[in-house]
Length: 207
Image (cartoon, rainbow, N blue to C red; front, side, top):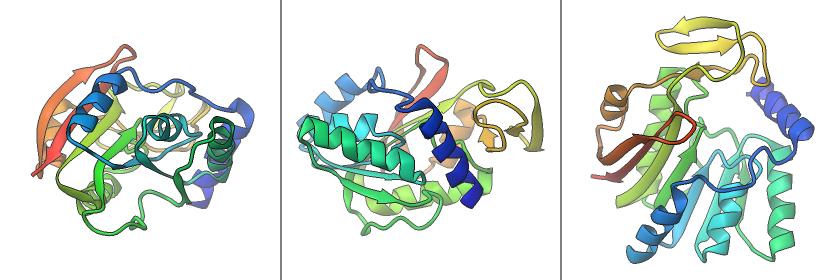
């Protein structure tokens, strides 16, 4: 965990806000959540805050959790600039989440949960299930193809650690749609599609 914290802090300190615009699917998702009268929304692995700030600006009670203190500080400053508020926590998302059971109406996790081995990913999915209300909504994105570094070490099937590049040393698991269906078996998956940068985007409702 300490090495992951150092790596992500280094990335944010060198690059600043890596992303400033929300994911391309969020406009339609936000409209749907408002129709469902969703209130509490968690951004799991919130990075430098692009989705926390967007959600707060859309009137949701936004929650962000991330391992990087640097990313979280950027989020705080961004919220201050926009005169918005959100609940922010610094924590490794692979641990038990600091929220009550059935607490959230929706959970987003955009380009995050793949940074782990499959066993850890399964634990994270269980925590998402725990904190999400029944029929709560999730939006998850993960890369389809190896998108970091040029050299890799495969540590288990479809899980690689890049030996170079910005995310050197961080595990990356690459999913198939079939695997997403298996791992999220306790959800009703309503859609899986590829976005403009070849990431699988999955929408689902908790059963």
